[in-house]
Amino acid sequence: MPKSTAELAAAIERMQQRLEALEVAAGAGSARPPGPDVAPDPFWLLDRLARNTGPAFARGEVAGSIAYGGRVRAPGAGELVWQLEHAVPEVLEADLGAAAAVLGALGHPLRLEILRRLLLGARSLAELQEIPSTGTSGQVHHHLRELRAAGLVVSQRRNHYAIPAERVVPLLVIVAAALGRSLVPGAEGA
Image (cartoon, rainbow, N blue to C red; front, side):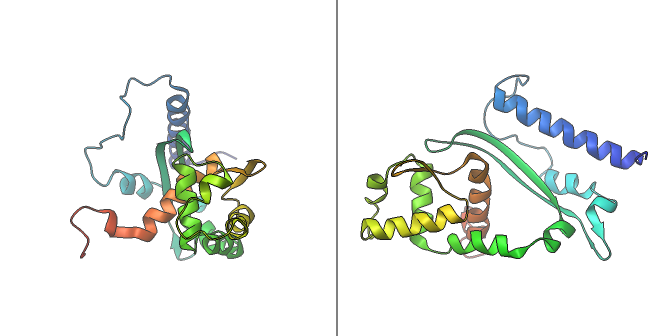
């Protein structure tokens, strides 16, 4: 079944973006310097999302898409380039139990600190126990078990942990979204 011109154009655009991300990750095909791209239009992402129309992005009165991504370099993550886009109807129709499990695992300050330490290069249980007010090794194991059950942490070997690469950018997006405008310089009171 032939697609409309708009659907084909959108599919080509998505493929080009994925190819660029792969080339950047591989260190090839791009003469751009490392660091964030500075777009001349401050609403480049919103303009991109506005082009996403049609059946894939609409169901009844609900339409649109959301996107998130990032370029991360951290001792506990290495070099990552990652992006993902979802149609809003798919998000609203998804099983929210899976989302609740992840959000529940993130709902404790010590678990967030464990994740921060893992991103900053900590690997071992001994390093994680150096976090102030972690309590006993059993308490740290309890929090690691919660993070592992949510898929946010994996055990690399006995008492050594890491955040899976595909979880790093989404985790940072969730934390940044929770912090909101407090991350914007001069917007503390906004």
